[in-house]
Image 1 (cartoon, rainbow, N blue to C red):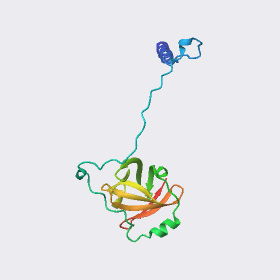
Image 2: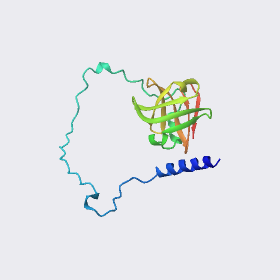
Image 3: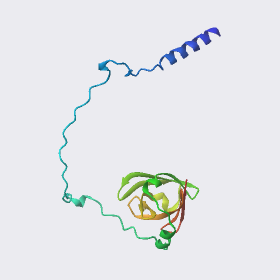
Image 4: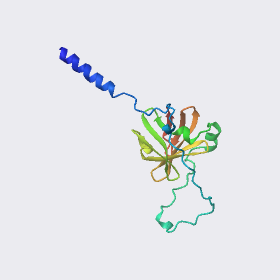
Length: 172
């Protein structure tokens, strides 16, 4: 039993010995203590102008369908009651209808930002991107077509619906 305590003490002493501070002490007054400053490099002037269109533009896919208002929705009424929303305030994890999760990032994807859902049903399973348009947050599928939209009703709370009328409630 005594050997066990002695070994435990030895292991602890070795572990604590590895926790010593090994950083260099710059508080010493020797002239060689600090590295020499770097010399500045000249920077060429910056030019501005219009770039020519990309060669072989046929390699790019067609733009997604327009983000027209949802059928049955009244964009004017939504905008009148909606609070201002910024893209940065949307980033992160949201609870959808209290039953599934939506993840929104600032990673560019087409005309919007990357997003997705986990555990959701209906149209929200196809969500691939999102973007802020005025006071609304447009939810899009992986092809860039709008599948729904939400608007801010309170801090960390959004309400809206999918194109088929499925209600969407986001909260954190």
